Length: 110
Length: 115
Image (cartoon, rainbow over all chains, first blue to last red; front, side, top):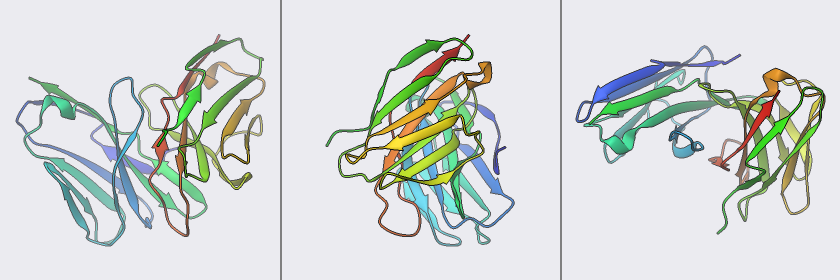
């Protein structure tokens, strides 16, 4: 089963509202990656976080890696309809390769 | 630079049959990973190939097997298909140059339906 948990599973917002998804692991991750999958599409790499407490920004997207390297978050400011999709975090643990969370599906009311 | 291509895009098989899915890596990439994605779920790691050798495997039975060829393309074979094998199968290539993870570049996937 999934070893990386994401919440919420679904999120519906009005265009212009903010959105946050959280990713939690029971064990320490060496690094974490975030992907976006549009409806009917394939996952597309967004960013990788490696350092404890790391924060990275991509325009309206802010990614954080927890101090203990067990959790991460993605925050989108002022959502736009182009942000629609499912956001996955994926963590690397030892011999098990990249393990994906179950994703947070974001829908937006224009 | 060509991206990751998978074939076929869709496939319908009967329970008990065997299936082969194909993947061409992005140029310059040396590693291929296969994932199974059920509807509404995150991708589940099946296995990874590096330099034609299996380099890690998830919790999938032996009837899931694979190959990587010298040109880094890859095949996923599934024997004795079961209804629960119905899913989107994603191939992802990456350039592994040392410890740690490189970003995965996914293909569009093969949608497998088992009836």
